[in-house]
Image 1 (cartoon, helix red, strand yellow):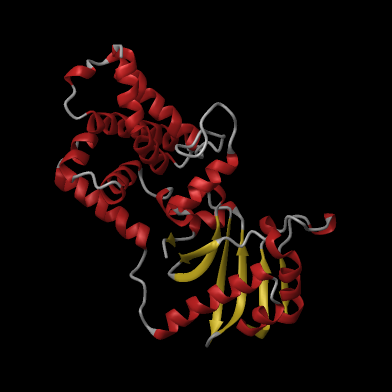
Image 2: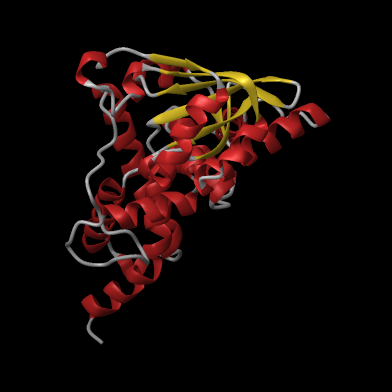
Length: 298
């Protein structure tokens, strides 16, 4: 095998891990692939034979490239690119694969990606490398060009943001989680009686203007509020799988639902309770309101 083939083989052995690191740091497969490609270009220019720990060297390069990209993104106040990419271990080649990106986002955990997007670049790097990929703090510190204590502090701060306030262990909180899970199951299954069983008869649903994708022309740009579980629950059942109900997450300290295609928060659903019954459901899609929510992994 010639030198180029040997180098390619060694790089490909690390590609999946590098893509995993870059995707969790950037939240975009197209950008993650760009970061990994940049690492390959730098490897070709380096003296690879003199690198003792190639995996560590490549992780350092990819992490620093991602850190620069995150800082540039924040400086421009731009959202991460949503363009298609070539996810590791899912699809190879040049074709667009938004479904593959959605699958990978789901495997990572869309709630985690949503929370990671709220962290500073340094917090995100420290948390992802140490907590998700078990990179020792000494190595994380070297990558960030900070002290190990500073790296630990950044990871700790990020950890608190990711987990939110400590989950309450009281029976009331656990019961409310069960109710939201039952709501989600019934809505997905089109089970009207199951839905009504967790709703107060006078329950209200409030849908903000941005969430009303199917609003008639006369109501575009206006929120809608409907009282009476038997009225609006039928709409949820009829809509069935077309509704972007999402998955469980902690929203402002309470259990709720988030819809985050490819890890980008698009909609949230919050619940108000009286005992074990839902009295109010709030559907939020307005970008400004979504940014104000404190979302944590459940």
